[in-house]
Length: 378
Length: 224
Figure (cartoon, rainbow over the protein chains, first blue to last red):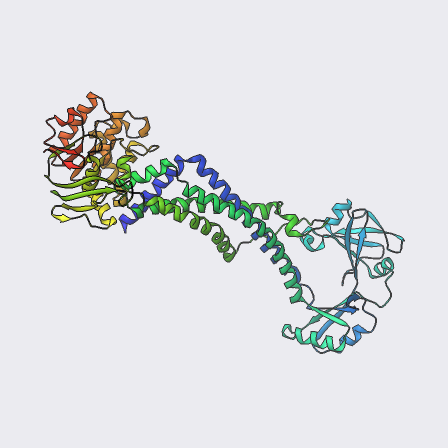
């Protein structure tokens, strides 16, 4: 065992010396490689963190949301629906919700106006999402005037800017009281936008949804699980677009790696010939080249991963923000909770280190089988 | 020690540019002697040395080392024999540029996996013996021709081989350095090593350090 370890040590020593001797070329390769890992890792880490964030947000949302449809379009919930639901077994609690969209010509962005279930602002007051407040330059205590769709001007006082920790979902949010909401949108009394239901037993959610569909045929129950899947697929789709773009970079890198390995310089070929002539086996040369590949791969992987970690969790993934967070006027500013999971790391490793190793293996093998007598004839 | 029987060596066999470098060499090389192969360019001297030193296989014929036929051995075993039995001093020295003299000397021993301290000590002793102790950390490209050749000799000796093979060892040296090389040659022979070299340098061929001269022309023996 000892000679084997010593031998590997000698091979690594030699490889390090060889890498140092071709500094410019190897540093160039390392930089391109690390950049590729950085981009892939950024997309992956960011997507994963967003999914976790969305899952955490949805964990507090109601199990079922009931919407009414007219001609296949979302319509208001008329009076009497809440009472009908109350008679369905399994429903623990139901509440009519009031929310709507408002286009603000000043900031050229859509806001979501919502009446909170509890602690609604007093009449004439509202609470704002941090992105929106930033966009309009508002702080607590300042007035905000909005012209309703009916043409009437409403002036509210900003009570509070919502905490930045909830910015991912509250970017464009305006919270106001029920009376203000109904007055602003000219919303008919007793009507609601939709109904939020809580179900005591999670196993019963699908049964409750089926009962709701039967009791209220014009209503559509939306399950929390479905929303979670929609969010996930939306993020997956965006991540897919980013990865498809990066696939081109991956291919370019594979070509570079192949070129690097197959285009062994005359100097390197001469060196391999000498090593074989003085007693190195083909296997030793292959091992030496393998160590070289591993050292480059691991260094690039670590550099890229650490870079991506810092980029995503300390700089909010500035480079990929527009693609991954969505296309909107109001970009939320928020800090993701740093996390890494084993499968994610393995996937990244697999898609960066394995293609490089595969791309360089054949050319290296071809170089390693150089006849040792080439040195004699050099 | 080494017996060559009916050795043939062809290059580009079966192609329009087929070339026979060796044609029917029968030769016995004695241990602990200095044998020089003499002949003009293209006579087959280097081809013969590559076959004796297990760097290449003959197209036809047998090579026996200590009575054992080694011409048909797989590459791995042939490499092991080459590493342990032969030390090479190439015409262009073939040192690895960018590495120090010391690192170059140790290279053939890496596959053996000997303890580093032991290997380092042996390399330093060899360099000191060849008056290169003070230059051991210098990169080989900074050394003079004579110094480079002595590094190559130290490298050839690192695995303590029985046989030293030197291809045109004085081709890149002036008369003084050539004489220095012949002195080293005598020393190696005095230690009981077998030395095989190619040369058409009269200084080498006529030297008292050389015990036997074998002539070659057009791939055949022409005088012993």
